[in-house]
Image (cartoon, rainbow, N blue to C red; front, side, top):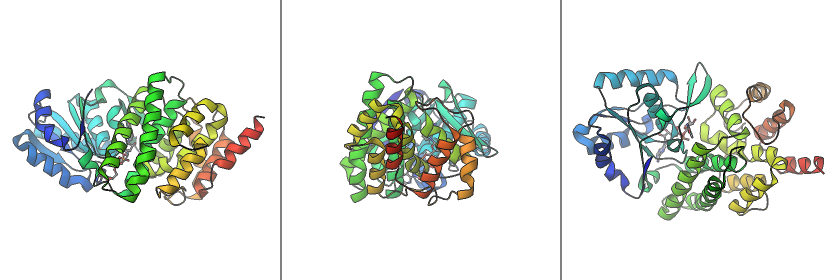
Length: 353
Ligand code: NAD
């Protein structure tokens, strides 16, 4: 895929459309970013056939069908998605069904633009699939467009990105190059996010974070994900919890769960974070950048913990430690109340002595 990275790079969009032979683009965004979508449409003039500013979290199939009808009516020949993972997801869902070329302009750190994975939600159930058709032809990373990202989304989206790199380090199909990228991605984001918390307009920190997100997204696209991503898909798809915030809460607990199964990966994660312990370091980082650290605070009901544990052990992804229902229930209970995962790591260490 072709990638353009820098500040002010959105200005290169008209050339990139011409390069792909797109003359009637459909511009996608969420309702929140409709203004940015309309700025893009103005920049493109006749090159923009229309705007569909209705992307939603977790790519509901109903929204995709409405966008498809609009795309057919306008006879579009390409897609420009400007926004976070929700907008990228809608572009990918259209590309899956039409094979239209896509240019993605990511404005969060979700990393979906680097993967051939598409998650879609139908009747409250989220399923993922992988197809080369959904991989964007071109990605334009513009640091300037990330400056408007609210502090809270910057923090949670940054942890969402770190989660991709963390799981890449203990993936079954890991490889040395992706592991290098994963460590560099974790390090960049761990350094940048506290600076962004202090000053959301710190352009150097924004550049470092977007670079880290690109690396972490590439890890997600290259190797298989494990327990953490399975738990987040379950919580997001079935209980409609917010994507990036769910990742932020679950990550330290999923890492603690896997700690005894892959000590080498744990030391790589800890070193990249500049911490003594991987799970503890992630929990601390989340606290430092001010994200909510319990599922309770982001809208999960305590009575749903058992159902979540049942669903999480159904069709589990490969994981370095066997995925056992009771242990997963314990993980969810700790994540629900916001308890530090460090005790879980210690308990496992004792059990393995
Ligand atoms: P999002 O795209 O839903 O964005 C959250 C909100 O922030 C939206 O209203 C959005 O418009 C707004 N926003 C984004 N960037 C902004 C900016 N720079 N300034 C102001 N507002 C901005 O959330 P997300 O966390 O980016 O993405 C989550 C979705 O992406 C989920 O559905 C998830 O499943 C999917 N995802 C998919 C993959 C994949 O490989 N398929 C990878 C990561 C995430």
